Length: 129
Image (cartoon, rainbow, N blue to C red; front, side):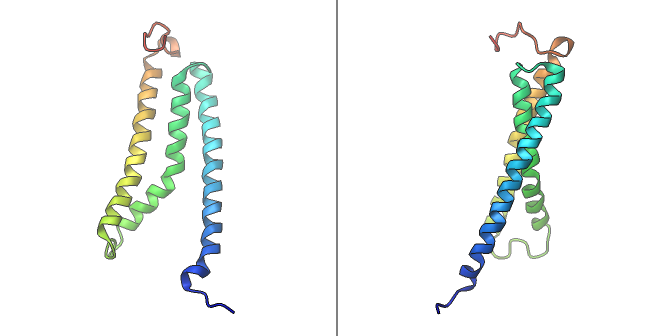
């Protein structure tokens, strides 16, 4: 019989948890993207690139919210960062930066859609041609 260290005993469990989390993220992304695409395409047309951009980035935000929420929650506890304050700060920064990037891109696409005439993006826009 071989001895197991605490870390090696946790590996199968961690792998299962990671696999479940990954599947849940992919499923959330698929459902979210499909829903956003359907709603925005109904109003702005299926061929509008901004519709796909909005759907993609809002779905990414929805997928990343649980991780960002957890990082924020962990940062507010007494003793947060006692082991490695730089790692805590970098982890929180990474989560917030990812959210910020997707929110900015979704917002830019929404502004493009909102500027369109009669609910549709302008075809005369030289950037689209």
